[in-house]
Length: 561
Image 1 (cartoon, rainbow, N blue to C red):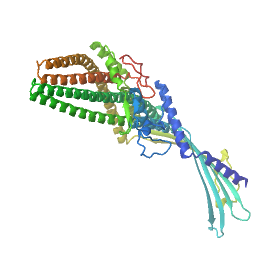
Image 2 (tube, rainbow, N blue to C red; image 1 turned 90 degrees about the horizontal axis):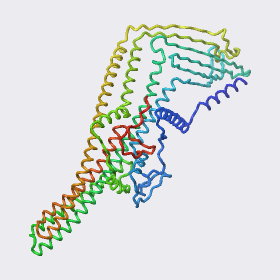
Image 3 (tube, rainbow, N blue to C red; image 1 turned 60 degrees about the horizontal axis):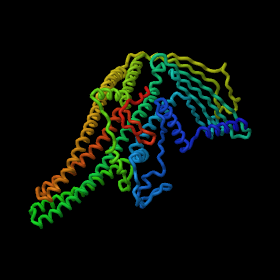
């Protein structure tokens, strides 16, 4: 009875200690992944918190129509009042609501889970199997019935040297269902170890998958950092383009109102016999064209705003209001001194040191070099030393009358085996080695191509910034001339010295000059951000917005891999 009670208690303890529910399992996986990511962030000098959780009261839910049914506690409102978003707030909203942003965070998380799985290979692995069976034996002419309880508890461990150790202990308890209730306990212990001596031996070869998984987490974080910068620039660029189109709507409306006044003035002059009816029709035609342009500008602006909402992760029917003062700030911002061509050479050098995607590509070259080493190892002969030991004995229904078994090392069975597999057939391994060299050469070419593209991106961004800077100067002067031209043509028209067509052309030139100046100011700001992005020097805070700095300087060096 004591043996059976001991056996049942042991089984219960093992079952309770080895089981996790779904919620606890998910939480445990989250804790492990977050710990890995935090470790790698610390190694890389990244200090912002990483989390997959999105705020429960996301802006998306607050902006959805009330008719949409969501499970509490998410609340919806009538969304009758637009939500004002500054540029910085829009960047924060995108970081929390954008599906693309969330997908990229989850990619980092998945790589961290993969690393945990590789680390688990070198941890001790426990296993247990327990059973209880009712049996009847009539082979000896008499009927014998009883219960067999059995279980195995084992642990195995792969060491980074390549050695693998396994130990298992089996317990069984047999009890006859007879009047005397005869019972017997058995115990069996098995241990084995295998040690590779040639092929597959050594820390470098055995831990290669683990090392690659460690580096993959670093790559994922670098790629995510690159994505955060690119995404912030994309959001800011779309924000500014929406404002530019809104400004075009205002400009088109103002132009339409001026042309209405010009047509009315032309009507009065025609009634006074000072101009012809043809000129009145010209004014009316330009007025109708201006109204059509105003309506078209409204539609284009609304479409661009809807696309911007989707980029933020918001529904297109949500009501948001952008900060129109940003355009005024752009007009007042002092332009950077871009210097001479020597500065461009220095900028490309900065980009080659700072770009995260280039660091990933360079790391992949090292990975391919290690893959060659593993492929070369697979060509070697395989020599493995095996050793095993067995002690104890089990009990069954037919041996229920025997004494309880015990472990006695002096009576155990032990063996050792040296296995040698000579490399006579290694065709697959030979071809794998050749493919590894091809992959290495291809990755080196990819790095060269990426370096050239980085240089090209920086040079193009620098040229676009220079062009936008010069365009601002030109369009500022053009706008001044256009305004002066409108004023003078109005005076000359009243004096009867010019035709209505001259005034209409001056009005069109004023609209074009105003739109071109705002477009140049927006493009200058976008080009400055794109240059910092391509240099790898754009600093992003933990909420997805950049730390405002319009200078183009030397950023801190990226922590080496």
